[in-house]
Image (cartoon, rainbow, N blue to C red; front, top):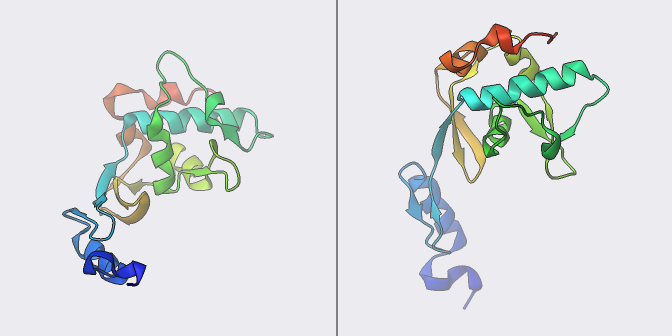
Length: 157
């Protein structure tokens, strides 16, 4: 028996089934893993990380990449795993050859400076962006009332 037909389901059939059911979620008929498309919103702590990184790179333009262990931190800034979702908006980019090394994309700098808006929500499937919502958000809206944009941007070009 061909390995792709285990349990009577071919890999192609499994892919079609997953694609047809990705919004509501389902178990893969080939491997049993649960799969689902998830929506993720850009929120204040993600925006705060982006502002801090923008300021870091503006202050030292020679540095173009930074390891997550060196991300700037202070009492108001908690580095959690949410920073890595910023790549799905095109705001932060991982280094193509090294794990944990990031830089702020041009769009990220533009967003922090208030020059562009980005989708408020993106949709992810298998950790890849598969869509975005129609509503957009500014850096000030993303920060919300929790952070003062002008105070955060002091000394940033």
